Length: 527
Image (tube, rainbow, N blue to C red; front, side, top):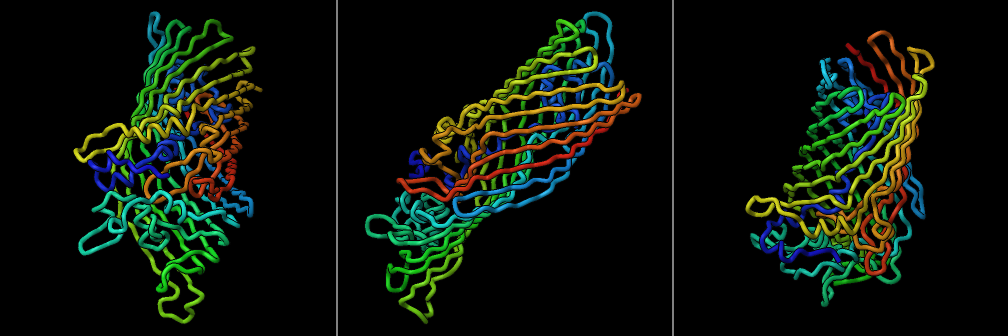
């Protein structure tokens, strides 16, 4: 059943009950391979290469490879298609986004002695996009969201009901989903607790609609150098800006459900629509360090470590339920159907997230001064994310329940990136790349063996699976100017859950496939 944090509720405000979850930490910590056209065309396999405006956000030692200063910018145009496949239906939605996802400046000075060059730089990269639009339809359903809420609700009626000057959202320790469901007649007392709308013989369907937008932007300041043309080093400081917005709608329509009426609980037709709005924003910071070693001109190895991004975030949101319950035995009654809209209070709270540590190792070979082949491995420790909540005294303390869920639901992701470049002429190059990232979700969490706890009044969640990307590109150099182009095809599969499976009951799910076809253009000047 949904967790009731008994010890925490005694000392925290009602807003804390609406607070963060392991699913939130997971969703907000996602990163993507993004950057210049050359970087993207080669699959992002630059840990051992450097010398690119994007590579310094991956391995800061890449700044040490520079022998001249550089300034450049990148435009990214990405049409995406989102397809959900449930057992009963297939729905597709599309959107196109355009943005300047990268720009930066590198300054380099030449020195005498073992330290051949010293470089510094500032760059901007969009490291994640939250833009998604998808719908899902399930028929028939095996249970109802109302039954799940009834199963975990244990607050007495007087804590859920509004009274003279009493607001359960502010004055009780009850779960906000329970309060909302009780006051919209989704759950009703049955003498031994509460019951939902679904019963033996009920026929129903469910419809979900999710609209997400937002981004994580990273601004980096890096320093690095070249030691004897053998060792290249770099350190970096990153500041992130996060914005996330979501509108989620979930509705059910049922025939022969157990509904409330003036005559008490009767068989009838039920329909409700749960609407959630929320916005999360804030900032964070991280550190990066790396080395590239070139023992011979034809071979390089690289390593980089990224600390977690330490986020300080604020969330606001609210929810409402529109409901209608029709009693066939009371046709013509003024109170039939029992219908209306119920809203939660607005919720505002602050929390902290530590994103995963990242470790990257790479190797690259230069073949005859005409070709480059590179290979990267990266590990992201999603099972080591941390969440802190703000107590009534303004202190941020570890959320042990959420951090325990993180270890139960998630595991480290392994990423492989491969890239190649061939210089056809001194001015013209062709490139190709591939990347593959394993799922970050444990199998038992994605397949319903575990109950998944979400925050607030939105019980839905989406777990990503493997991600594949394939890319191609062209590059042209004319004196100090360059222009690069890349095409990137990306395929990401996910599973959408309307709410968690419970007590052997299967909640509505759908397989979500996101495909995108990015056209990336970069231009710059070296001096």
